[in-house]
Length: 150
View 1 (cartoon, rainbow, N blue to C red):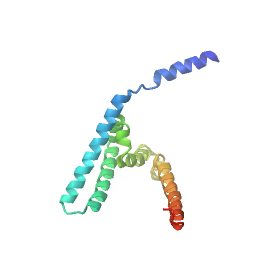
View 2 (cartoon, one colour):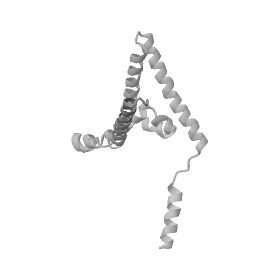
View 3 (cartoon, rainbow, N blue to C red):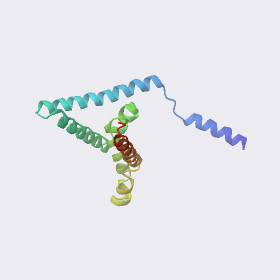
View 4 (tube, one colour):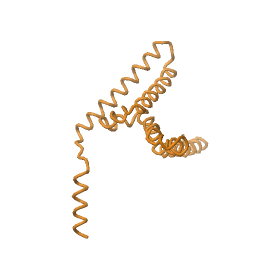
């Protein structure tokens, strides 16, 4: 039993990737920064076309989501996330990727049991707990306002 445990530990050490923190931080900064620069560029384009800032921001969000979905469909966004790590996963583009990636992966299983069942595998918990925490915080804010504490 002890030999198997040592062999397993050696195997885990062999296959576990070693990440260098500083280069990873730099890559995440570059990728996330590039996404943000692109978003700012799109916002500026929309504002120059006559949209108000709020409307331009909403359209920019849609453009970033669409770009992420398209890049995920062509298997480009996973390569970006592999290079940039959290820099590509944290913005809204990463969330869009997390919704689309399972749909692309399981499309061979059909519309219902593949795409329909698996599309929210990754994003589902985020949506669920995001809505739940928003609801709880809303109730707390309502109660605090009712007692003039907020």
